[in-house]
Image 1 (cartoon, rainbow over the protein chains, first blue to last red):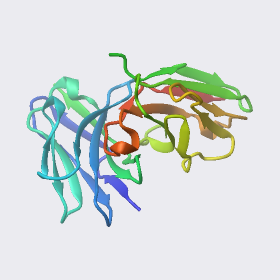
Image 2: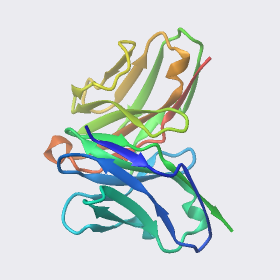
Image 3: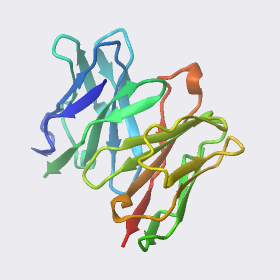
Image 4: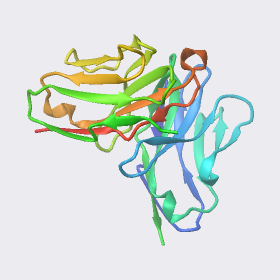
Length: 112
Length: 117
């Protein structure tokens, strides 16, 4: 079975600092990986996804993630965060036909 | 264009009441998904439809939960005899291509927050 572990429940950083949100997955077959962001009182919005090919995936809002098969990781990074990046971030893996399995989320808090 | 919409946005029910939650997917989207998000947790899959066919309902927690999409567009999630453990945000998502592309992006609605007293 495929599952996802987000290693940090909360990550506080200062504005304009870099950030990394960690995600590890478990799977014995091909994986499709996703990062979603959830702003307060809103639905989830796709940041980026890895399907195949280049292991470095670029997404919206300046975010990128790197697929690392040997470490079974898919960490999300941004070189310089803004106050507007304050949100909950979810890593997910596709299981079965179209079922997304989410991690527990990481709350990113940006301090001025 | 319009995104996925859900109604009501907030619902308070007394334990034992039945509730119905509505989802309007993006027009033309083939697949529709329901997820349950408990407080402080990630969303958990409940069920999904391709057009009007319910292809997977493995995530529905009990037979009190029922979902339908009779005409392949709007969907309703019904919960009978609500219990306190049903309190959660119920998210709906839709995707354009369905099984033709299982990696197609799922677009999420804002959710319905259900509180059972």
